[in-house]
Image: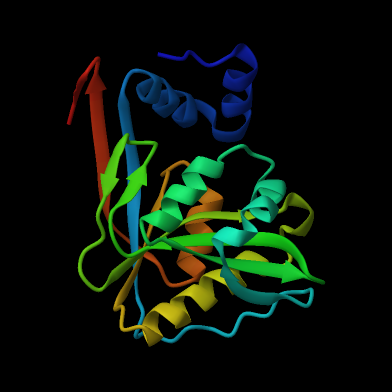
Length: 197
């Protein structure tokens, strides 16, 4: 069990107050939860326009070095495993530079936070791991990417888009609500040593 540093506790206190400390404590002790948000894909999808010119297209395994450079991480095996599982990634570019990505799974997806698989229902697509380069945040790129995913999924015959979000992540919940996502449930996990439910 990894205990948070004093600096991290202060940061949670400053950003989320007592409620944040309360749930972070439960998290360290083995209790975790995520809100399930769902959006019907037959509902109107807004034409969101970013404040900078953006092009959107599929990200391919051949572009993995570019993805790793954007994310500043060494998660190459994880990204490769996603493609092997059939997950797809949409990428946003500004003047050819990769600035944002968002993944989707229509089959089983690994939830590292819960240490288990999440399986979307038939006709559902699970949108996850949305990332925008900090220099390009607040310019409408993430909503544009989300809307493009929903349009493409609808064209492929999917009926619902699913997101999973921490209840404490108020900014994400507001953004998802603006995109038409509504809470429909809660995933919970309790873990004590090797036992997990």
